[in-house]
Length: 237
Image (cartoon, rainbow, N blue to C red):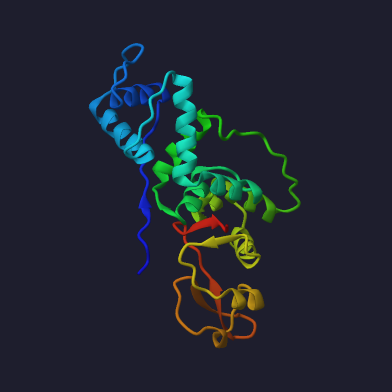
């Protein structure tokens, strides 16, 4: 029986307010009152309980709390491996890619992944810097745009670039194993061999991603790949 993944919920964090919530939970006096709504207090309490379980060490300062928080995040969520894998593969660090990596071990939403990424930035665990990319072709432009976003719709790509060959470029990226389309069921070996001109003999089953057409010159029947504006294209990890 497959082990159920641990569910991770991360609210949007204000570190000072989280610190005061922690002091409240450990019966320590705060150095000044900070207004926290009941809803925020509940979400912060659950987050602290997830990280610290039944043992909540006493802290003597905000700075000490931040260091303990950082340590518990890494110990609880195995962030060293997750962040290391993303860094070593040279992937952009956005919530989409972060969530996909975390989802191999935990049940976590994109909203929580985004909140966790924001928290790690505030804790100076991650940072951003401009990156120079050498573009040699339109396909490169398309790939790095998808890479920077993590996931985009085909409709967004068509609106953004307005090229007649956007679909063919996406097919090329699929063939190279750089991107994937959600629920795309056309075999890669068929795409590699025939491209967007697939004979009926190469098709074993119907697919919403294939459309039949007749070649005007030969009168022969072929299949071409069809992508709708709603289809999601994401970088392949």
